[in-house]
Image (cartoon, rainbow, N blue to C red):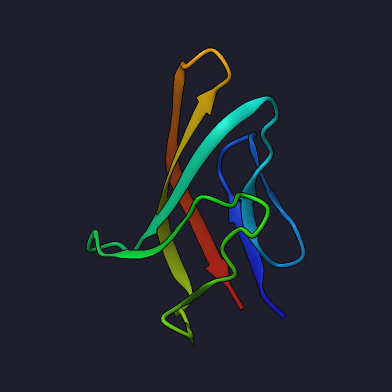
Length: 88
């Protein structure tokens, strides 16, 4: 069983996935990077979230970085970034 622990208040664990809790946006992008800056995951569907895998394989325990861009209905862009700790 794995736990994903986020450092931002807009993030929550949802069925062992890491995803933002956001409302009233028209588009969004979430990217996950390893500590070397390699992109492991990207999605436009925030309901899916990140499940701690990359290319079909489980990622190792450790700290990963996220970047989330939310595009509001009035064309404002809100960007959030931080770290998440993956523990199995």
